[in-house]
Length: 298
Length: 229
Image 1 (cartoon, each protein chain N blue to C red):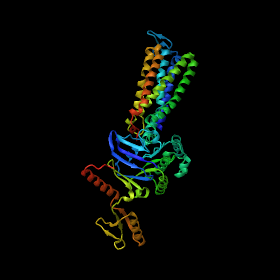
Image 2: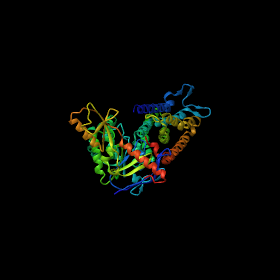
Image 3: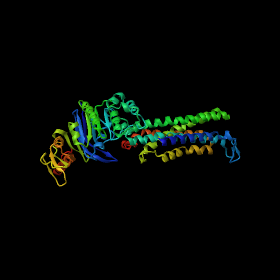
Image 4: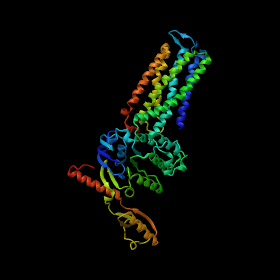
C-alpha cells in the first residue's frame, strides 16, 4: 500500500502562489478524481506532486520520501500533462522507443494496449489530436509506476477509447494510487471512488464520491408535440419542457419513453450544471467556515 | 525544420569561408588590396600569412555554433510541446536536461569542425604549408570551438524563455554571443600574431570555465518552471 501526503503545500509560478496551504493524505489504492473549474489549480497540484514545481512551502511525500528532493522517488511516479509531449518529427514507434530508452519499458506492449499498431509508422505530426493523445497516454504506460497523475486523460478521445483507458486505469488502481483530473462530475462517478475538489487553489472536499449529494438535475426538452401527459415535465417560458430528475439515467429513460411514443424530440439539454452547484455550495460552506474563524482548509 | 536547414547551410558556408581565409596567402600569393606579398612581414611585425589562418580559427569556431543552432530550435520546440516538462516528471533535473541538449549541440558541431579541419589540412598540405603549423591550427579550432559551442548553447537555452514564438531560438542572441565570444580571436592575431596561439588558448580557457560554471549552477540559476510550456 502506498501513501501520498501533502502537508501545508503552497506552490505556483513566478513566486505567486496558485495553491494555498494544501494538506491531505491519500492512502487508499484507488482512483482519486480531482475536480475543479478552469484555473482552480488542478494542473499546478499535479505538477507540484510530480516534482516539476518545487513548493514554496510545505512538503510532498510519497511513501515517506520528499518528492521535491528525491529523484528516485520521482521515478516512481508517472505524469500525463495537457501537452502531448511527443517528438513530432518521429514516428509513433520511434517516439515510444525514445521514451522507452529513457525510462525503460516495452513499446510493443503499449502499441497493442492502446491499439496503435496501425499507426506505428506514421509521423506524430501527421496524427489527429485524438491519436496524439493515445500515443501520449501510451508513453505513460511504458513502465508501471506506483503513482499516476493524469491530467484530463480522456480529453480528445472518442468514447470507445476513453472507455478502454478507464478500464486500464481501473485495473491498475487495485494496488496503485491514481489521480485523475476532470471537469465532468458524471465521468468522476464512473471512474473514481474518491473525490478531491479544488477551487481557488484550495481543497474544498476530500472524500468519497458516494457521499456527495448533488442537487436534482433539470433537463430541458424541445418537441413538436405536447409531452406533459407522457412524462412529468412542464412547459416553461423558454419553450422547453422542464423535466426534473435525480440522475442522468432517469433523463435517458424519459427520452426513450418519448421516442417509443413517436414524439419528435428536436433538442434536449441540461439546464443547470450540478458541478457548478457543487462548487457553489462548497464555496459557500468554506466562506461560512472562514467567517466563523479558522477551520483548516483540507 | 526549414529553419534548421537554413542554419546548417549558413554554418557550412561560414566553414568554407573560414577555410578560404586560412588558405588565402597560399592561394593568391599576394594580397591584392595592399600590394604586399602574402608572406611579407610588414613593419611592426604583421605577417599576413600567419595572421589570416589564426583569424580563420575564430571564424571556424563561430561556424560551429551556427551549425549547432538546430539543437536550440529543437530545445524551444520541445519546451513548448511539453517534452521538457515530461523529462522533469521523470526525475531529470534542469542540469540533466541541459546536458543532453549540450551533448547534441557538440556532436552536431563536431561534424562541421571535422569538415573544416579536413579541408584545411588537405588544402594546406597541397600549398606546402608546414605540417606542424596545420596541426596547431587544427588543435586551436577544436580547443576554441568546444567552449564557444558550450557557452553559446547554455546561454541560449537559459534565455529561451525570452523567445515568444514557437520557432526560432534567440538567433540574434546566439549570433551576437558567438561574435562577441570569438572577437578577441579575430583581432589579436592581426595585432600580436606571435601571441595568437596563447590568446586563443586563454580565450578557450575563459569561455570554457564560464560554460562549466553555468552548467554546474543551472539548477540554481534556472527554475524548473522556465522549462514548462
